[in-house]
Length: 281
Length: 252
Picture 1 (tube, helix red, strand yellow):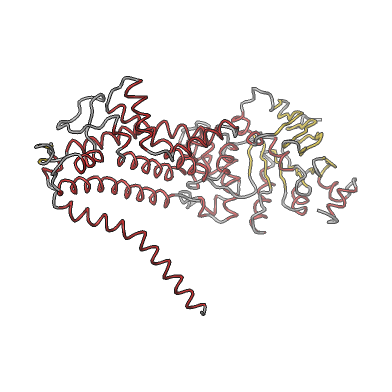
Picture 2 (tube, helix red, strand yellow; picture 1 turned 90 degrees about the vertical axis):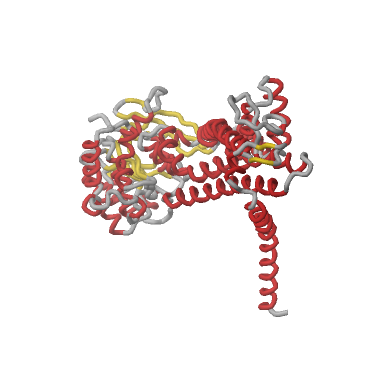
């Protein structure tokens, strides 16, 4: 067979693989948009559920997911960013810091149900927080931290060492170099990592299953010790636990969750490309 | 004899087990150009970086001996390092502009030092860019990104950035290695102006450059100081055979 023919076949296989990867995603998104759009209405988004969740809206679940995501951001970002600045910029390379790095990489790969059970044991029971927003947020934060830390470390290490040396040679303390040069340059990578981590937190069911999620709670939470409904768990409940649930409600809920997550994803991409254009090396 | 600006006394330096400098003793007079030259791996850059303690940033190193700046050992444990580095500026082999504009680059060190006075910042900006022979070329582009300048301009910008802090000593590590001959000449000319105000130590990027700029020159070979005399003497009548071999191009 001649080379040209071989190349054509090769390209053909590559194209088919690409289609095989993209097609299922597009189909899933397409069906959810098509079916879900019919359920979406003002009432669906801004009203309490009623009639055993078969009527009314999913407002408390939307609010719950927003609260959990923001709470996770509040708890995870300061700790994660401060921790990685220490680890990447200050800590010396010893067996101890290597062990910590390895642990972080491994933590990122742990199944979310394990975090859920850890949260149940640690926060709900041992620390007596009960099933509450606080316990759920802390559980989600612990699950999110490794993602934030790994991405941020990569971003910090990508900033050329020379910038730190130059800053020091101009009488800068190590912190000044980090504050004025390294962090601004690493920011796009850090923000991307944060959003990816929060995306995971927003979409997961397992970690909130035992720690915060309410099966049916048609009112908004009053304090951090209340339970809340959350979109992923609500979706799980109405599609498996409630008999004769209208399909349109299920698709509508899936669509809202999808839009929430996709818009965060798009925001991340836009932010990243914005900061990249401002970068000068 | 007047007290030297810098006195390096019996310095040994190790990277792990590798000894990079052996029993180096030399003094650097103020307001002159001192050259450290020799083949690669001889310890020139290490010796240079010891003078503002930039080698502190390298892990797993060890040093013995003293480095005196105006009679004060800069390796005393209570030396304020940030202040030392403001007194002893450094220009690197490659132009390394920081992210940001020309103006931000030049005033970066002042900002770190806590200067907030806009008027003094502007004054210092013009003075240091003028001293680095760059002001006339870029006075209309102070707010454009530093990376938009040519390589030669970037390197003079880096010199200006160090000068903005009004250091007493300026260390230059092969500052013209990435530059074309015309930019090189401009940098060398500005050095001749600068030595009236500063003490300059330079690792040149060629023997010819060493001979052109040196008031006194130190020949370093494999961590040993072979010969240290005035530039005229060392480049016309070297005493040590190894210095002569290197200068005449028999090795190196």
